[in-house]
Image (cartoon, rainbow, N blue to C red):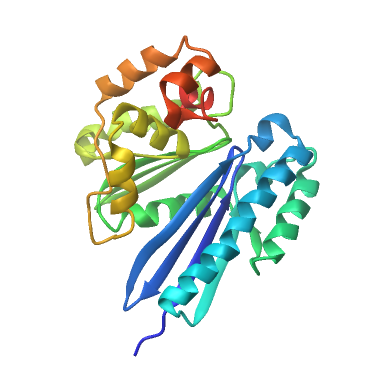
Length: 270
């Protein structure tokens, strides 16, 4: 009889924190639960509010673990929390926020590790490579963006310290990626590749455009054998949605698109 392991992964970002609880058994991973907290710590640097939100967020996890242990009788828990761009930058109050994270992570016996953009890109594309051999991925967080081009003959990565929390809408920072794409499009047939968007604002956009997806997405994520966890959006759909929200204020967006709650402004950059 093979052992069962519970895997707890946490992502501490500039805009939000997320966790995913999975069960590893017989060479397969089953997603049991996932949740997120939008805190915008980079934007407001309010440690008191961050502490209160993180307290409620972390308290959920031991209850979930107890529930799944009764159901699956797993033998061990493997856990890790990673910090991304916010923790890589020389930001005021960063050390205090790290201490807050570590205080709560001790309660769930989890270590905190700050990862590089290279490591972040590798981790984010591991899931993609379960389904696609060739792709272009664009992972936009609150303060950083990682773009990966992968073909049979090419792996190229682009790293930027720009995310959806930036107030500027100038995208000249990606000119080296665009130049590379244009110069190599015909050589590697880049225009034939799937472009895969990663990030909370992109998921919120998807759920706002295809409003009936929320229940389907939740169901499908529990079984990685089901390849129907990717959903297509055309460029025209994205453009039309952007034009609908660009001139709306926070309250208008929240009322019209509930899935964009707490991402009303960041989604415009994304």
